[in-house]
Amino acid sequence: MSVLYQMGALQFTVAPINADKVAHKLKTDFARKAVFGGRKPSEHTGEGDETIEFSGKVFPSHLGGEPEMDLMNEMRRAGVPHFLMRGDGRPMGWFEIDELDFNHTHLQSKGVGRVIEIRMTCTRVDAPSAVDFAPWLRQLVGLFSGLING
Image (cartoon, rainbow, N blue to C red; front, side, top):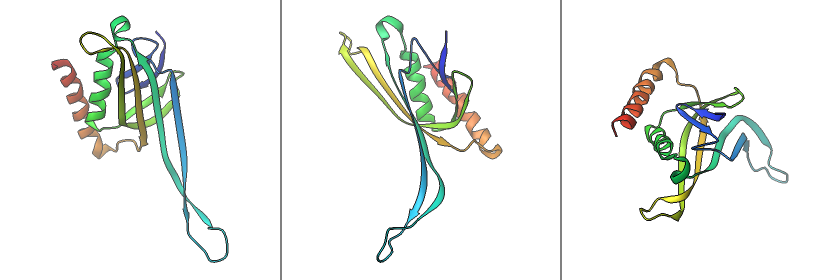
């Protein structure tokens, strides 16, 4: 099965969880100040926020995908950066999950949608330093044990 993107342990594939749209936003920051009688001059202050937003659909009654949605939520809840790689092997950098949206439509008798639209918004962060790596690894292990134990 073809991997579209991989973020930590989470794989976006064609099924059960896919990304049919990816929005990659890059910003540059400028400092601007008012001056009398002219345009505001700007000074380049460096890189701004870089965000990636994944959108897709899950069909739980046909293709599954609920365990992957649980993994996404646990990764968000852990608050640690995860390495993101595109399906062609291009490294995208370290990202944190800022926001998740799960929109259920065509509800079944137990309240689960036949179609669940997902949206995951991530922000690029610096790679964990050696000092940060131990707590990051501890949270990652806790993430997986939480998924395994329930």
